[in-house]
Length: 106
Length: 121
Image: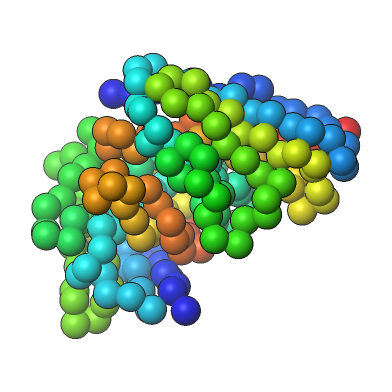
């Protein structure tokens, strides 16, 4: 099974900050990686597929990069609506998720 | 509007059974891959099962032999029959529509709001 490891687990930041979350796969997954945002009590929402393709309606301050085993999600200027948890997911072989990164207010 | 609405969750004793439903609107479940993903309290997400448009089904090792995914095309609904339930099956269960990159790599692009399953005596 492909394991996904996210870091950090928690991130404290301020509005306007540039934020980067890292996701590592236990083996190469090419670019078959998605990022999801989840707010408390809500379902996850797709942000990015194929490592870097923004889903419809997702603000351009979100971006994704990487291939193989190393991936990043970047928020260029953190907004109040962005305080949430973020999960990476590989879909090269079945589906596995990272443990999540909670972005909280500093 | 594309929408998924789950129902059927509740409190069940260990060893019991439950059937979850996922009613879809805005698309046909028969033409899409459909999955169930669960999230235990304060935990990450775990893929549970997938139903391919062609009818093939696959399960996570943790539920293989206990859970069955199916669909009713006339009702445009996907189901998850859960048997021999254990405490570790306690979670919010989300239904997802899966869409493809390059026609073969599927990610979850639409999620329902989820239904809560609690397994406890």
